[in-house]
Image (cartoon, rainbow, N blue to C red; front, side, top):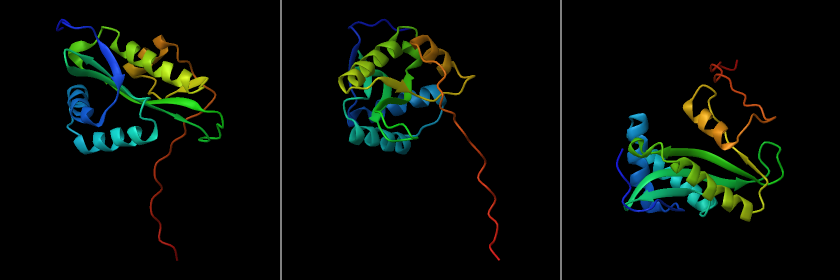
Length: 155
Protein backbone atom coordinates (compact mmCIF):
# COMPACT_ATOMS: atom_id res chain seq x y z
CA UNK A 1 0.00 0.00 0.00
CA UNK A 2 1.63 3.30 -1.09
CA UNK A 3 2.18 5.88 1.61
CA UNK A 4 0.34 9.18 1.26
CA UNK A 5 2.95 11.94 1.16
CA UNK A 6 0.25 14.63 1.25
CA UNK A 7 -3.06 14.70 3.13
CA UNK A 8 -6.04 13.27 1.33
CA UNK A 9 -8.13 15.97 -0.34
CA UNK A 10 -11.82 15.58 -1.20
CA UNK A 11 -13.19 17.88 -3.89
CA UNK A 12 -16.12 18.05 -6.32
CA UNK A 13 -15.91 15.96 -9.47
CA UNK A 14 -14.66 17.67 -12.64
CA UNK A 15 -14.90 16.46 -16.24
CA UNK A 16 -11.10 16.25 -16.28
CA UNK A 17 -11.45 13.38 -13.78
CA UNK A 18 -12.96 11.01 -16.36
CA UNK A 19 -9.62 9.41 -17.25
CA UNK A 20 -8.84 8.73 -13.58
CA UNK A 21 -12.26 7.18 -13.03
CA UNK A 22 -11.79 4.99 -16.11
CA UNK A 23 -8.42 3.87 -14.69
CA UNK A 24 -9.88 3.05 -11.25
CA UNK A 25 -12.83 1.19 -12.78
CA UNK A 26 -10.51 -0.83 -15.02
CA UNK A 27 -8.33 -1.77 -12.04
CA UNK A 28 -11.39 -2.80 -10.00
CA UNK A 29 -13.51 -4.50 -12.68
CA UNK A 30 -10.98 -5.39 -15.35
CA UNK A 31 -12.83 -3.64 -18.19
CA UNK A 32 -11.79 -0.48 -20.02
CA UNK A 33 -14.97 1.65 -20.44
CA UNK A 34 -14.13 5.27 -21.33
CA UNK A 35 -17.38 5.95 -23.22
CA UNK A 36 -19.50 4.64 -20.36
CA UNK A 37 -17.73 6.80 -17.79
CA UNK A 38 -17.78 9.90 -19.95
CA UNK A 39 -21.56 9.56 -20.18
CA UNK A 40 -22.04 8.95 -16.44
CA UNK A 41 -19.73 11.77 -15.34
CA UNK A 42 -21.31 14.30 -17.71
CA UNK A 43 -24.80 13.22 -16.56
CA UNK A 44 -23.93 13.91 -12.91
CA UNK A 45 -22.13 17.16 -13.67
CA UNK A 46 -25.25 18.43 -15.45
CA UNK A 47 -27.66 17.29 -12.73
CA UNK A 48 -25.87 18.33 -9.56
CA UNK A 49 -22.27 19.46 -10.13
CA UNK A 50 -21.37 19.81 -6.43
CA UNK A 51 -22.70 16.42 -5.25
CA UNK A 52 -20.24 13.99 -6.84
CA UNK A 53 -16.79 13.94 -5.26
CA UNK A 54 -13.29 12.64 -5.88
CA UNK A 55 -10.47 11.84 -3.45
CA UNK A 56 -7.03 13.13 -4.43
CA UNK A 57 -3.70 11.98 -3.00
CA UNK A 58 -0.36 13.26 -4.22
CA UNK A 59 -2.07 14.95 -7.18
CA UNK A 60 -3.74 11.70 -8.29
CA UNK A 61 -7.45 10.82 -8.12
CA UNK A 62 -7.62 7.67 -5.98
CA UNK A 63 -11.38 7.44 -5.43
CA UNK A 64 -14.72 8.77 -6.63
CA UNK A 65 -18.39 8.78 -5.67
CA UNK A 66 -21.19 9.81 -8.06
CA UNK A 67 -24.30 11.27 -6.45
CA UNK A 68 -27.15 13.72 -6.89
CA UNK A 69 -30.34 15.05 -5.33
CA UNK A 70 -33.61 13.80 -6.83
CA UNK A 71 -37.28 14.36 -6.09
CA UNK A 72 -40.43 12.94 -7.63
CA UNK A 73 -38.97 9.59 -8.68
CA UNK A 74 -40.41 6.23 -7.64
CA UNK A 75 -43.33 8.00 -5.95
CA UNK A 76 -40.98 9.76 -3.50
CA UNK A 77 -41.86 13.44 -3.56
CA UNK A 78 -39.39 14.65 -0.92
CA UNK A 79 -35.87 15.35 -2.15
CA UNK A 80 -33.51 12.41 -1.56
CA UNK A 81 -29.77 12.11 -1.94
CA UNK A 82 -28.82 9.24 -4.24
CA UNK A 83 -25.42 7.58 -4.52
CA UNK A 84 -25.04 5.67 -7.78
CA UNK A 85 -21.45 4.50 -8.20
CA UNK A 86 -18.17 4.73 -6.37
CA UNK A 87 -14.73 3.24 -6.58
CA UNK A 88 -11.42 3.32 -4.75
CA UNK A 89 -8.07 2.53 -6.39
CA UNK A 90 -7.16 -0.90 -4.96
CA UNK A 91 -3.74 0.43 -3.89
CA UNK A 92 -5.47 2.97 -1.61
CA UNK A 93 -8.13 0.82 0.05
CA UNK A 94 -8.28 0.49 3.81
CA UNK A 95 -7.67 4.19 4.45
CA UNK A 96 -11.28 5.33 4.97
CA UNK A 97 -11.30 7.09 1.58
CA UNK A 98 -14.83 5.81 0.89
CA UNK A 99 -15.99 7.18 4.25
CA UNK A 100 -14.37 10.56 3.52
CA UNK A 101 -16.10 10.73 0.12
CA UNK A 102 -19.41 9.80 1.73
CA UNK A 103 -19.04 12.46 4.43
CA UNK A 104 -18.43 15.15 1.79
CA UNK A 105 -21.49 14.04 -0.16
CA UNK A 106 -23.62 13.87 3.01
CA UNK A 107 -22.59 17.47 3.84
CA UNK A 108 -23.76 18.56 0.37
CA UNK A 109 -27.04 16.72 0.83
CA UNK A 110 -27.61 18.40 4.23
CA UNK A 111 -26.97 21.81 2.65
CA UNK A 112 -29.59 20.96 -0.01
CA UNK A 113 -32.20 20.12 2.67
CA UNK A 114 -32.10 16.36 2.09
CA UNK A 115 -33.20 14.14 4.97
CA UNK A 116 -32.56 10.68 3.43
CA UNK A 117 -29.77 9.19 1.36
CA UNK A 118 -30.57 6.22 -0.85
CA UNK A 119 -28.66 3.75 -2.99
CA UNK A 120 -28.98 0.24 -4.41
CA UNK A 121 -26.53 -2.60 -3.88
CA UNK A 122 -26.33 -6.32 -4.48
CA UNK A 123 -26.76 -7.95 -1.06
CA UNK A 124 -23.92 -10.43 -1.48
CA UNK A 125 -21.46 -7.80 -2.75
CA UNK A 126 -18.68 -6.28 -0.61
CA UNK A 127 -20.16 -2.88 -1.44
CA UNK A 128 -23.22 -3.81 0.59
CA UNK A 129 -21.03 -4.44 3.64
CA UNK A 130 -19.32 -1.07 3.22
CA UNK A 131 -22.70 0.68 2.96
CA UNK A 132 -23.96 -1.10 6.08
CA UNK A 133 -20.89 0.13 7.99
CA UNK A 134 -21.75 3.68 6.93
CA UNK A 135 -25.22 3.24 8.45
CA UNK A 136 -27.36 2.24 5.47
CA UNK A 137 -30.18 -0.18 6.28
CA UNK A 138 -32.86 -1.92 4.20
CA UNK A 139 -35.57 0.50 3.04
CA UNK A 140 -39.28 -0.03 2.40
CA UNK A 141 -38.59 0.40 -1.32
CA UNK A 142 -38.48 -2.85 -3.26
CA UNK A 143 -36.23 -3.36 -6.25
CA UNK A 144 -38.12 -5.34 -8.89
CA UNK A 145 -36.74 -6.95 -12.01
CA UNK A 146 -37.72 -9.27 -14.82
CA UNK A 147 -36.28 -10.61 -18.03
CA UNK A 148 -37.20 -8.70 -21.18
CA UNK A 149 -40.18 -10.51 -22.69
CA UNK A 150 -39.59 -12.35 -25.96
CA UNK A 151 -40.74 -10.46 -29.03
CA UNK A 152 -43.97 -11.94 -30.23
CA UNK A 153 -45.33 -10.98 -33.61
CA UNK A 154 -48.68 -9.28 -33.57
CA UNK A 155 -51.19 -11.06 -35.86
